[in-house]
Image (cartoon, rainbow, N blue to C red):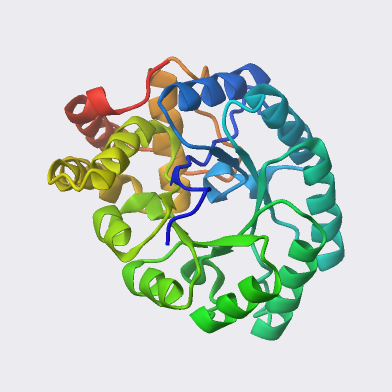
Length: 298
């Protein structure tokens, strides 16, 4: 199923300066470079945004800055990440009032939250707002498996639940199960299997910013049913596999690439963080040299 929200939607990073404070100018440069690459929308506070290293006030600040700077040039999607339902509802209402075009909701999962409680959480948040809600489904990270029928029931009850974001490998069977139940999907995990996911009906992909130009072109070629889409994706795949060794490894690689692209001034992440060693730096440079025409630039 295809829908209005779709295409390439990069998850933005949180830039920090050398002192570990949020770098507002770096953040606005990331937004501008993403939009210039032709993306369909931008999203903030995914795992690649290091949301778990930000205070509530910092998330509020970045939300306001995101919406103000995007200025309706494309949809701005903001994740709601509090695990307490009361806090998540309040944040969702606040984000809608700020002017976000859609929400992405990471359901609670700490301490083995029962699926029934997760469903109640999703229902409470989605029913508190009128803008589209994307439910993030990341069973590997959260340890919580949810059947496609559960999502279908939620979508039937709450029409503003527009998509389920599938953060899972393999993603294909879940996308097909959701499609069979009439549920639209987006795919994460850097689009590792994007050509297959597209064939199964996914509406979009949510990679990091550095690969946005390549993903935009792949998505265009997939829509044209061109074999060149698979060829370009195959060219990109070794880089995706290298960077996806862990979330913190991906963040470290992403920030290094954005510094080299002239978009960020610092690759710093708040501690604890992954530090690339000399061999990993060399590997990243090998991939960058091979793919430079398809990576983001300022």
